[in-house]
Length: 258
Length: 282
Ligand SMILES: Nc1ncnc2c1ncn2[C@@H]1O[C@H](COP(=O)(O)OP(=O)(O)O)[C@@H](O)[C@H]1O
Ligand SMILES: [Mg+2]
Image (cartoon, rainbow over all chains, first blue to last red; front, side, top):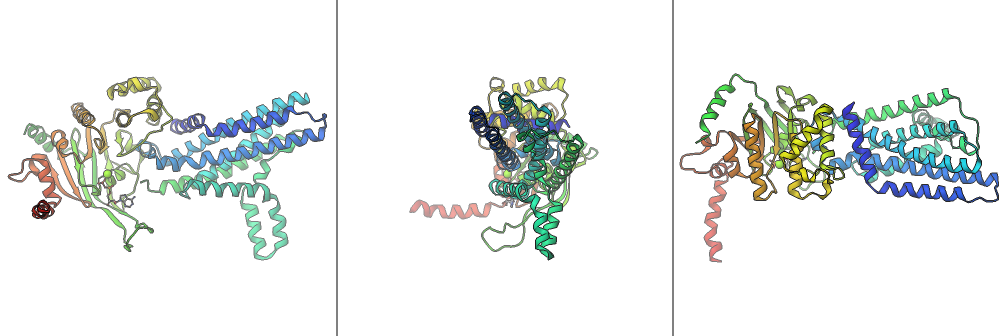
């Protein structure tokens, strides 16, 4: 465990010391701040709309952060040859992979925590309403979502050699699943035949990332979800992230390093 | 000649002692690159049945021209590449098991370390990988930094290091676990004369401390002065093995002459000699 956390620590340190994540982070924070400070006649509908824009922005930048930090880990270590002295130590490749996962995921969680804190603060001040449980549920599901995305991206990074192609493929898969996931079944029923079976297969085998998107909970100030649902979602995310990671470790272990 | 007595002792002891590093009939084939020039579909054979043993306390020089397979051998020993056939072990443990790497230090041929870390942070990271207890960690880091003379730069990002300093931090990370066996891939390549001399002294001091050193090199002059035994590899085959003095044929005065003969360079040398009057004339 110490080995895994050591690898994760380096990932987080790198993320803190590299500047490019800050750009995205500050941009999102700035827009959130600006949108939060405009008060258009106190109209509840517009306020809701602004909240939705902010949260969508947060979702987009969180996907980008997750994919781009995870996609570069292994390829960059390979290219800059830092993988050699590391793997020459008594550490297994699976431990390296798990450390990378932990580091990227924690980095995502940290930036998400900052986003949600900022958002809660601004909208709380405006509305004088502090639904902390809602925020926590939305934040946690968002973290789970990032975990699946990071694991998927790491898997891609040992499959495709180029960072950019991996990032593009994973990004389009994630966005596709987010937007189309819930409709696949309906499309499958309509299509029928072999295509229908195929689409249904996809519907039941791909992770339903849209389940983790509970922005409405915050936008409409709905009552919080049942905690058992949150627990089930956690298990669901663990299962998928675990599968992707296991595949990634398996693939990484068999790859020659040179 | 000064080396002959200790070698004799080591060699007689060897018979009963388990080797620290050993390979048995090691064969490594690289899959042919699909995009490469030429139409050869067959795999590139980098090692053709290499058998080698290195014993405790030895300094072993692993020599060979570029492309001979030295780095490939080390890559197998460290578990980066798996052998097509044959066996390799460190401390009697198969190299496929990570624990075989607990007591070794490795300096890669060309490496850059995490540039955004400082020397201290880098060494702390590696110390954690070795499971060095927290109480000893900082002291150990201080010791190795002192040893490679980088204390003054310990808190600077590695990004700002010169090439010589990068090589020294490489040596520091190889020593962080106080290893019994050091595997150094061309430790002197690309260094200036002072740097080369420092590496030579370091190897000598490691030997005095009773450590085993397995290193590859082209710098034959250095090899001669520090090695107990050398192995000469060419085209993936071990062409010669033994103490430097034993490899010299009658009339040969330096390892370089023996090396060129052993790798079969002589013929070309002669043709060069025949050509030279022509080139002088023109
Ligand atoms: N990744 C690789 N793919 C294909 N061939 C390789 C690879 N690495 C090394 N080789 C080939 O294997 C041979 C041995 O290389 P190497 O072990 O690096 O030699 P050395 O370290 O002695 O200079 C060379 O002919 C080289 O071209
Ligand atoms: Mg080499």
